[in-house]
Image (tube, rainbow, N blue to C red; front, side, top):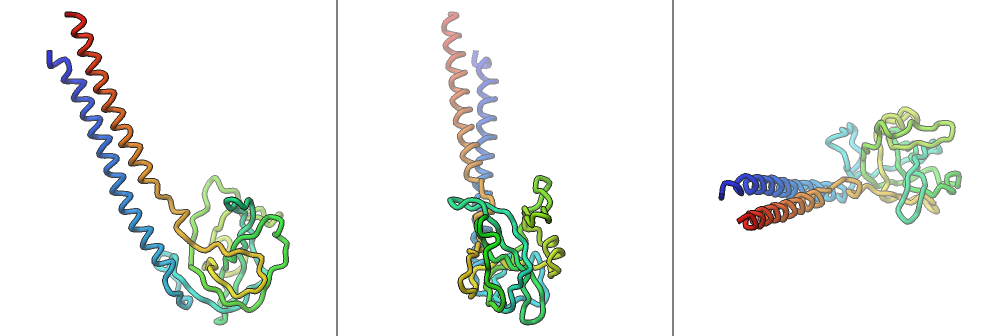
Length: 228
């Protein structure tokens, strides 16, 4: 009679083991991701350095830099949305350094109704982080050049449009006075870290599987007693 319960019991134990192993793996991935995020946060908050002569997209991502130069009137408006604020634009300006380089500067956020508001230009000192955001994709529309609206920070495309090097500094602090643009510094908020949620899902499924297995065995045993 024991053999009648062996297969469902084995099936239940194997299922539980698989689900628990998946949850454990996600916890390991959580530890790994937290270490990466911690390293990025330390890198973002490090002491700013001068803009390197040769910039490497992989090596220098998130590198804190400080530059002096001129904020030009050449700019791009990237449509974004901020929590508790609403829709607005990131202002991406062409910035000419004191060394004669022309690069991209992400000045920060303005509300939609401030798109055409006067913004200070000219000599400025900027501290921020180098960044090459990955915001493009098949679901992201191409820029509407007629309406002067972009839908993603595509560094190569923005650089070609504004005739700059493909280098983007996301401002953290500036000395521009009476600037309506609010800096949106680089942080780790946009980097997904859902491993804890996945782990809890797998562990919850393991508990449900265990309950279902016990319920099935109890019902099968009850039915067997009823036939006696």
